[in-house]
Length: 369
Image (cartoon, helix red, strand yellow):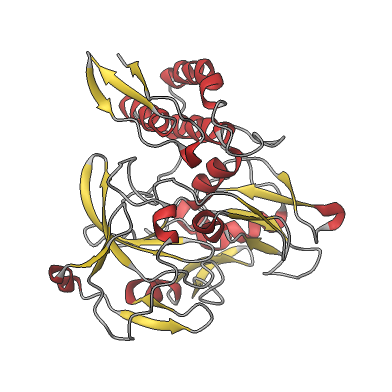
């Protein structure tokens, strides 16, 4: 679906040309400073996993996928998207901690106060994105706006954003066993569609800490077993030692929505947890029906603004298997800044509202091809 990725491909000559184009647009992207600019240490290309503890954490769930041993959603991503960075965190030594960003989340060095596996944590990024509260300490936050970044699928004004789900946190939980037929649109309006009962997804497990109920497809995934990498080899084991280790507690109920994937509308079930966003796409192939959203990409863009968007775009160009997909990635990213793209005078990619309303001027248009 929206987040499915594949192993890195061979370098292709057109990538260098597109990266040059991206460099030309760097001043445009830098004009959208949601945060303080990219931190020292980030790299536009795939980066090595920075510490032994980060490598161990990544390998447990994602090394078997990277080696092609099974078909399953990435929990971190095929590789790191940045080098090891330092970010402010009040309780860390010197008020700074080491982190590294992946497609799906951010790894954090927590070794100063915990042993394995809790020496590596993955941040409460989804919670920060839907509340706008950027955490800089156990009890310290910087208040921003909830992220107006699309939570799944292609950029599309009719699709929900993280900010959309912010308004759903206080909704009452469904009763355990209830069939999930509720839908949400970009405005946050919740309705019911009886036809969705045919998918048989139910409210499975109530979490009293946040007063929300986990959808059955997600609860099954969170408690699933399969190939994991431990002790220098692959074995069968629980995907997560604790079902909430990777996701955190649910912050909303699960809602069906419609997003575009490759320009094609799809029905997708979305539930926001503290650390991750999980999606369920019934017509995806087995192993990819439940996926972890690209929260790490989205958060980095929200936190670091234009610098984060430029880094994400360069990463997508590097990973694109064809020139067409790389151009499409470029157009989608430019649309996030308020720049529409056209081909032969026909609008191909509509401009969408810029992140966190950092731009008040009318959308621009760029001719492609």
